[in-house]
Image 1 (cartoon, helix red, strand yellow):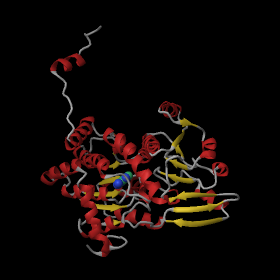
Image 2 (cartoon, helix red, strand yellow):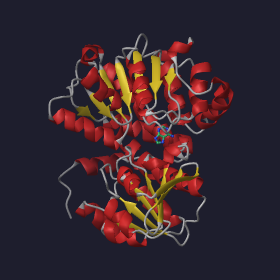
Image 3 (tube, helix red, strand yellow):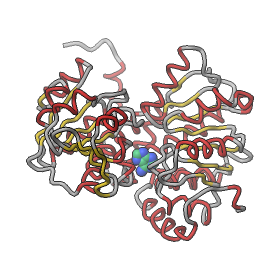
Image 4 (cartoon, rainbow, N blue to C red):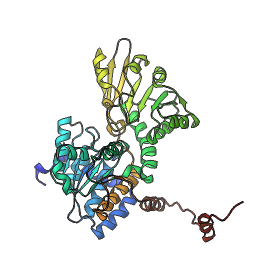
Length: 420
Ligand code: ADE
């Protein structure tokens, strides 16, 4: 591949990346099954797929799957800090995927990479956070006519897309992969739960047992993180704006408080809400000396890092991904500059859950093509039978057997005539 067709940090990392990609693959049996089928059927022959996803070992296996189906695939990062440079190198050298991603790239490079993917003029887009779709609509509307549709991985991206659709601004159909049950029940909860704790521990090497851990947001991700922090021995406090979610957190046994109260007692604060300034200046004011603050939501907007920078007397790099902000009478520590801690200082979700998320991505891309011209310019969910098929394949791979309805039970469930 010529050097204009990729931009990565260091191609000598390619063999290390390949080993790690192959290791992840051993825990992605559903994606393997799909890849084997794609290899035979070639559903993407002649199709270019432009992807803006976290460049991880798991994503590399999705790229391999799409290529097995005959696609030309181009990849850039969906976050400046989440790229695994060895994986980017392996994709270029061993898997023939033009990749544009460097861990720690600045904003200009991030958008240059995104545009490099769009220069391939894809017919299908795959996003994690809606950046490809919004760049096409904002800066490259001439490409809309080439596009059959897209897929979107994450809650934040789906929210952005639904806002576009509501304004009639969305000009091609997009599959909300996030909304498949086999995605958000597992990736958002067990994946974010484990990888966020992993990110905090790798960055800080602090003990969670006995600590007070504040979880901002009790969506699927927040639930997962709170559950795992509790399992590590933290006293977990949840903050919420949604009455139902707050009630659920309360009944799950967590103390629910407003942030300005929770911040006073926190040793760790983690955000996963999708909204801005969830940890703001008034919260920093009341925090204890040494409080550690991080974010696991998609964008780096949840912690007011800009305000903190302005107020700080001094800012020190303590260790990778840990910055000290010295305020009047205390220091607070922000992890990964407020970017996704689980993908910045750890490796993101483990392959076992990404297997199902990326099975949805792969089948979502095929569904878009199979239904070319039939889907409205809106946000769509994959049909339930595909979602259930992914669950079945996963159970099969895990060696878990389940019961089948008997004809008598089926009849009972479909009849309205039975009573007490
Ligand atoms: N999002 C969260 N974890 C991920 C991973 N391991 N790969 C790609 N995207 C992710």
